[in-house]
Image (cartoon, rainbow over all chains, first blue to last red; front, side, top):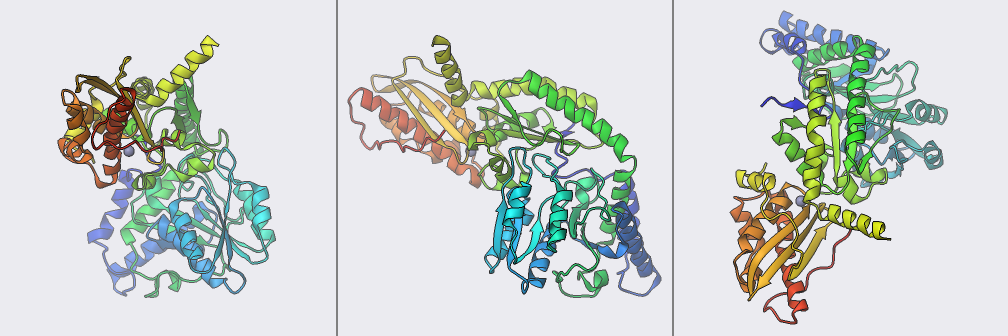
Length: 397
Length: 137
Ligand SMILES: [Zn+2]
């Protein structure tokens, strides 16, 4: 059975064009970029060309792009590096309650090391409340970190407003844009983000490579110490094939983006409408308007998400319930709890995230089998029984 | 992630349903993991004649419900009481460590149903403890 892959927020397939670009850097131009002979200088200039390509996508300067091992490292570097470089100014740092664990756990780490953290609440669509941010900011606030778009429910945050607030108060603003990069245009000359994290495998690039944008003049410590790579900012021999692949993947992602997004949004909305119209007792999660083009998230009442995923998997469909990283723990997703869902409703969530290679037939197939699967699980559920009996009582009254 | 046995019991669970004139009903749950299990027993002359279940939960929870009910049908009340979650897990060819606690629920649900039966009939079942009151939904 061919897999229908609907989990692009977890990771994406690497495009053939990307693999082709990467390939020679494994066994032909394998030289260490820090060396001086020819095959090494080819690696070196491949890195610098990639940096320029990536910078131009964000209207940034090449000198502001630093390669890392991925989104997690970029987030750790941005947050810990800023906190340590600015701790004399203050030890108060702010983030939101719906961040990825790479951000949340890093803030928790800092809170164990003398920093005071404020977690901003979000509204029922998952958006950070601007008033709460203004209230939270203090004299000793040195960093605000709010994600560009949420990995679970696809909500795009009011980044422009947040960045203006931080700029006015001279607070460093970091945004984890791992889910946004490759899906929406970000102009870093227009938007006052100081630090922006990205990861190549979320936009059809390879795993194990990412970048951190550091606006010129931002006070931040190094995170990985060692050699003089990345303009002495990030030590470690560069992942040359990965970097080359990331640049190719980002170019492809931003080529005709509006046109591609139109197609993906059409599929996304077909799934949303199909679920709303054909399955009762569902809750649509996330913002209906400020939403990533590829994200669908619903809670199906009275059933549990893992059994739903297992049944979909038996039918060849790969999707997710909450964050894939959340499945290691048994609590329902912190994002779904933050937008006010009960534990039970949060447990019954399904996330479908589309990619450029998804086809309308795949969406039709999902919509064809999903109502039956949901009903099958409801027929096994004591909660659904209770609901039906409750309805019966109401009818009697 | 799951064994073939678990997947079989999950995809085609046995004994899903309710018993209208059940001798005992037990409901246990754990909102944290998201598993709630309700077991219905039909007991005649100290023998489990029938067992049915309804479960809200993950693959492991549904599979253990299916397996546990199969294992107690035809057994005496005392034998049913002695069914451990370990035996259910073994019958399923194992569960991932993180899912072991879901299997505890099946044992607890059976015990809760036996407790209900004992209470209704004013009898004492040796070794049976009252069920935990942590159903939260
Ligand atoms: Zn479970």
